[in-house]
Amino acid sequence: MIDIRRVFTHVEHIHHEFGPRADTPLVRGAIGAVLTNPFAGRYEPDILPMMALLDPVGVDMAHKLHAAMDVPLDQIATYGKGAIVGADGELEHGALWHVPGGYAMRELLGWKGSRVAYTQGVAEEKSGQPANALSIVPSTKKVGPPGAALDVPLTNINASYVRGQFDAIEVRVPGAPAADEIVFILAMSTGYRVHARVGGLLAKDISKWDGLR
Image (cartoon, rainbow, N blue to C red; front, side, top):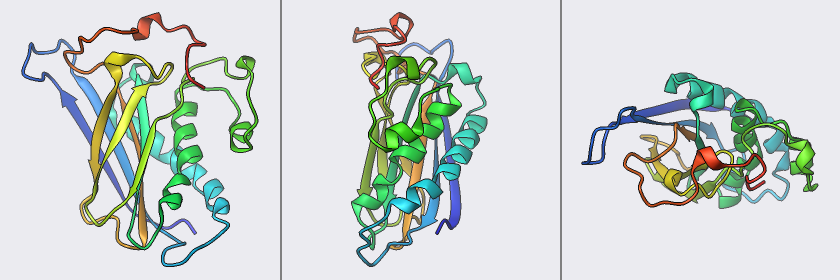
């Protein structure tokens, strides 16, 4: 059921946005895996078995993205995910990425909660999340043609409302997805927009339990 055709990685270093040059550039990265959509061209009522099969795909992509960004793990400050479904699929096929994609990054960054509890819709106590990456991973998805672009949202890994770190990265895999494919995407960055200056909560002021779980 899992057939990966291509993996596309994009990393950028942003030095300025027509203002003063940053002392340290913002590093943003995204990785997209192009998979065959086993449900293309038909309606399948039970698509959940594919979600579990995507778990190792998400883990592998998260590690590859971190390696491509070439920054210490503790410098990763924001994350996001997305999916582009080919024209013979449906939007719900992209939703299969919510758990495998999101939790791959959260666990890489130190989260200690339960994937199983989340998958089954069980509320978690604060004591079940004693580490890092407490915030929900923002997400977006669409059905699109080959070469379609997706603006993947990025927010702080521990508190979604760090205003200076609201961002997005445009991801486009040339020639993908074909009508019977899906592009699953992960994205991360090292933090604040270059020249962020609109106030709000700062990352250094986050309580570990301020994250939106």
